[in-house]
Image: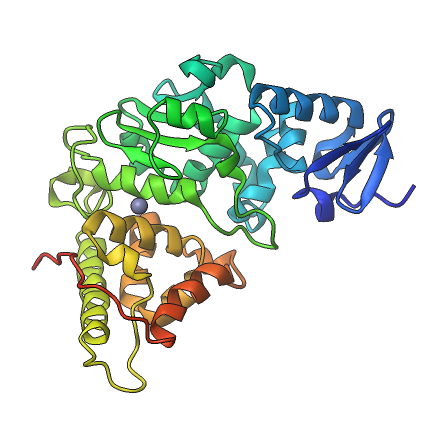
Amino acid sequence: MANFDYDKLRGKRLNFVPTKVQIGEWSGDLNEVIICGEVGPVSLATLAEVARHYLRLTNQSLRPPLASLVCAATGDLRALEFFFPISTVLDEEERPAFFRFLASIIQHPNFRLRVIGSETTDVTTQIYTDIPGIVAGHLAEIFFYRPDLLDRFLSSPRNFWLYTNQQAFEAGGGLAGGDYNPEREAIELVISRLYEGYGGLTPGVAPFLHELGHMLDHYDCATLRLAQSKGFLPGMNPEDGSLFSPHARSLFIKGKQIEQARYIAYQTAQAKEGDAWPIGHPYVFQNDTEFIAGYFEMFFRNPNYFADQNPTLYASFIELFGQDPRRYWPSDFPFYRDENRKVYVERHKIGVQNITVPEK
Ligand SMILES: [Zn+2]
C-alpha cells in the first residue's frame, strides 16, 4: 500500500471502485484504517458509509472532501481546519479556543441551519456535524476576534437554508446559484456549493462568504432585524451603539470613494497610463450591497492584492474584524484577483457604476 498522506489528500473526494476506496492517487481496501492528522485513526469503511449516505440523501449531488467526511464520521471539528486557514496560524491557546468558539456557534439557539430535500421536505436531522460545522466555521473565522459582533448578530434567529441538490433548491424558491433572500432573512445555497473553492492550496471561490456579506449588510444592530441593505457592515453604522467603530466607518467611506473614483475614471476613459484600477469586478459596482458583499469576500480571499491596491479600504476591514487575513494567506486566490483585473487590463467596456458614498 502506498503511504497515506492525510495532509495531501484531505481535500480530495472519495471514489468507489470494487472492494476499494480511491482518494486522489491513493487507494485502500475497505477494511483499512487511515490516520487522519490530529484526529487519528478512522476506518475507511466508516468514511465510505458517510460518503454514500450523502450521495443517497442528495441524489448523487454531494461529494464532500475527505476532511469533511472525517469530521462527519468522528464529530471532531478539528478536521475542518482544512476549510479555515486562520486555524493554522493560531497559537497553542488560540487554536482550541477557535474550535470551542466554532462548537458554541453550532449549538447556538439562533444559529438556524435547515437542510431541505426534494419536495421541500426537511432533512436536517439526516446530516452529520461537518455541514453545520462548515457554515459555523465561516462565522468563527470571521468573528474570532470580534465575538461581541457575532453575539449581537446571533441575538435573533439567523437562517441558513441548505438544499440537497439543484432541483430541491429550485423547488424551494432559491435564485441563481445561491442567494441571500431578504424576505426569508435566509442564505440559500445548494450544500455542494459549500465545498466549492477548496481544490487548491488555499480556499478559493466562496459563495457562502459572498451571501453572508449580503446578510451582514442587511443586518441592523439596533433593531436586530435584517431589514434592508445599508451598504455597510455591522459596526460601521452610528446607530450600532457600543459596537460602532467610527474609525472603521471613515476608512470604509474613504476607501470606497477611491474605488468609485477609479471605476469612473476607467469607465469614462479618463484614467491615465499607470493609474490604479478598481479591485472588484464591474459586477460589484452595480449597487451598494454587491459592493460590500464583493469586497467582504475579497478581504478573505485575495487580501494581498486588496491591501496593495487600496490600503485605506483594506484597513477598514482590519479595523472592523480585528484581524488581517494576510497573516494566514501567503498568496491570494489567483482566480478572483486575475479575473477581476482582466476586465481592466484588457480594456473591456464597462457599464456606469451605481454605488453611493455617504459624506460621513
Ligand atoms: Zn451578490
